[in-house]
Length: 280
Length: 221
Image 1 (cartoon, rainbow over the protein chains, first blue to last red):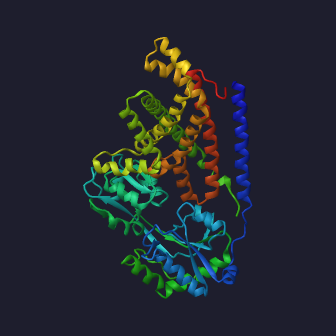
Image 2: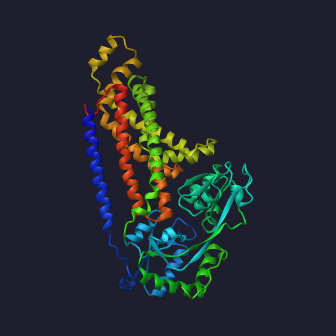
Image 3: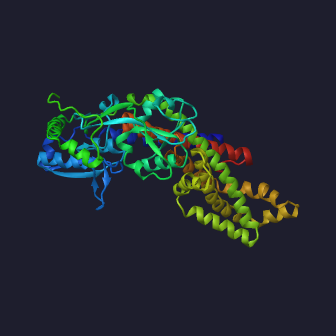
């Protein structure tokens, strides 16, 4: 009987490996070529991936259409390219597969530039910056008045999974207890319900969601832990599109379009300005 | 696009730790659910009418609402009533209670399939209700329902992936973290899928061992 189980297990293992192997080899034959600029111009449309759960970068407006700062930028790029913008909804885990499987031409959504990510996608020159800050709750058990106060095993942090605050916490506040949740509403609810004392995130991602929090007082500490640079993502190797986007972005920075759209959506100027630099 | 598995291999130990946590959560929730189910099926079989109705209400409530919503309630709504469960507690309780409802239903069917002659024999021998359930009915249920129980257990093992939403760092949560850092989505999720396949094989093995050890049951017999 044990033999029968072993047989059945090894049959299952073989099947599993075969299935897994098939999935992997399928993934390997995804077309390698990016959708170059010519195809965008030929089709007369620029397909833009935007995450609508990141207000004010991406959001659903009252007509239930995707709107926000990223949509403003996408529409302006499409106008400069003389093509139609086609906004495609993407989420945090699937935005890169969308790009790689050629369902979108470019991806926005406050994608912080890192070396590791630059091995997978190509970035344009910076579109905007973000400032990493500490958001603390008034009246927490451990007083949090400066970033170094976070490195204490009594401090409970709550973070949105996959955001840039995590590497900073691992490096600078490794003693703190960290809970990772799925999205900003859940994270702010956890703060309000007393599950956590603070969070580390970019000011630009929390400024709008934190307004909806009721019942607790939240404050942003003055210290800026780091500035991060955000570009537009294109498929690795799609240099024809990236180069044209770079020139378009330079013109959008120089004309003041980016800052104007930013101030209209955020209500305040970008904390760290992107220098207008013709060399890129 | 070239897949670069070499770039994500460093995550394997972290993912395996997440897989162990997922297996542990599924195992504990399954054992608690099995116990709730045995109790529920016994009460439904032998209890007075109000108790039978209560069991039926429990089963129909928990099998007709999504598990995700049940756990969401435990995690985010209970604090409004002064009860704050940790992520692991909320997921464990939610999965156990949910599994308890399904396993009550599965075991009830098993109870009804026990031959009357066996029950009569046990009663003649002077078995109490508890002895009857443990020595006559339960072994029969485990034996007859091994495939159904095994399915439920596999569903629960894979179902632990939603624990990531509630801040439990199991395999899916860790895969999402790694994906956000590396952007190597296809490599990361393929790796996670392979580990899940391994987990279901381990989970089947655990269940087989458990049935054998508790009731001297042989799978497939």
